[in-house]
Length: 386
Ligand code: GLA
Image (tube, rainbow, N blue to C red; front, side, top):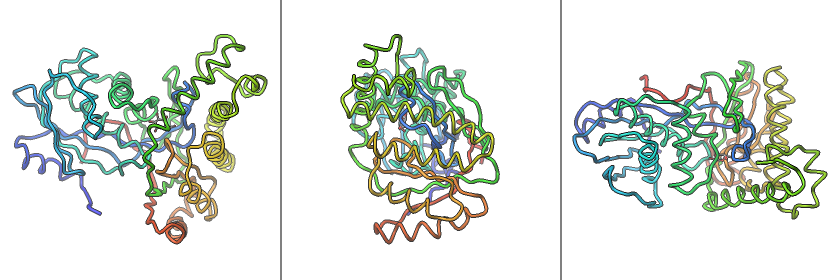
């Protein structure tokens, strides 16, 4: 595999476009728990990764945006004042961000942009949100616009919802903007208030990339979101004032189960119990009760697999292998599902041997070579510091 070093970006930029760029960095994320809760106005517990997407940028004298991706060795360009429509490729994330920034009243400048990412694409670590946030931040910076990070996160989410057509929640863009070094963030996706939950040095967050990605992921994702909306519409016949599944307690859902078709009930059950698990997980993390945190992560995976139906054979296998390794407190799929990564909470002293045990066992069973690495939570978007 080609290794890309972000430090090479300025010289690659000079070779292709000429001129001296500014370079910005926006991280991907891993979610410890709170999956498929963000678009239900619930709770999530992500951490920004030390892997990121970098955008090198320099203004142009016309109103054209030219973009080159180092990872994909691919280019495109567009004029800022022309209407844009979806192409169904990676350029949509960037054109979508430019369109949404324009709609929000920002006067952008034409620019040459070169992007490079150390994040694996399509692996559930939010490479797309990192691309949106890095480019959005870069475009605002050269236009001398003040960057409000919460507004940038919302603009990037709109780019994905309205332009790309993926009805994601706010988690990925929020954490890419607001990541805190050494910590996960408990985010209330309704109020958008967050608080840092430091990761204790006695544990490690280990990420296992299954190296599979299922193509139905985004249509299935949108279907799950519709299922949740159906649940809210049916439950609101009996429970007054509910706006989202966030407003429904486990007891209320049990009481009104008969209102929902079985499949819709399962979807709602996952979301309602996952919100409760996420709040319990933050308390467990804060009180250093890692056995309890691991138990909650395991329960989250079971719920995603059996009730939300977003797991797959490879994710289930990786979770099982991870749980069998020494020093593991818990393991679950992270991100939207249908492939991608597993997040594991491992005792710091055992973490060094984890990959040696789990990697070969996964390869034996699947023929695939997983990528397994420890994540040290990093900061949110900003100038790249090389
Ligand atoms: C994807 C979406 C997020 C969130 C997760 C599932 O990563 O982009 O908004 O819904 O799936 O928790």
